[in-house]
Image 1 (tube, rainbow, N blue to C red):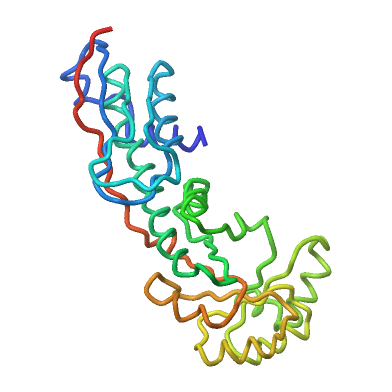
Image 2 (cartoon, rainbow, N blue to C red):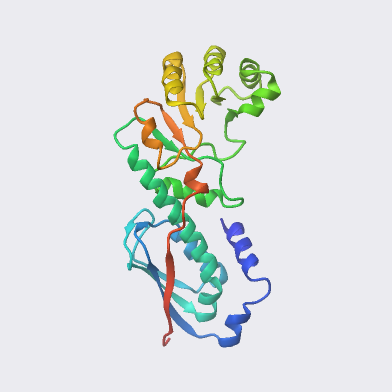
Length: 276
């Protein structure tokens, strides 16, 4: 993750931090507290720490929480000690990662709880912020979700445009079986019951029911009859996921986990000089 964090730091500090250098022209040891400003699931503490370490390896951080912990408003989660100039320069980038990752973990945790007691596993998608996928998919795991494929190299998923390019569901699955290594499962996205039947007949390993009505999804489960694993996708959010729990599907994927989770409010407060 170092090149990604360094890229974020360079985005924020082109040549110097003019504000900090104005008020702190010389090195001075200081401390600042990491304070949680709302309840949630904390995630990204390693990334937070690494941001400061890449600026100055002498920065010391004492944590009072770990990734995956439920934290409360007002809780002190860490103390960061180091050159005050480094603490000020790295503050926003470090918090951007921590707030974003904790927001995703918190939102995912809330959705995952709605599936508790069912066989259905919650999956993320590739709808992540560019260059932040490694952080955002990790946050989904910390929140209690599961990762779908990491990228395009990671698995075969034949979506509507792949099917259109191949000339149909059967053709797409046949071509994928001929091209992809036999150890790869082949997943097919379907939008209606006719496509469901084609996918079953073509021997798809996983069938994704995309934006289908509840009634059609129930009928699709009957058509599939255990011949393939079943995933549900398409505008799945915390508000409507409960409607899927009675279907008995294997997976439900939600892009909202990463593209719509609000950040968690976290601050660095009470910066002050300390004696060496």
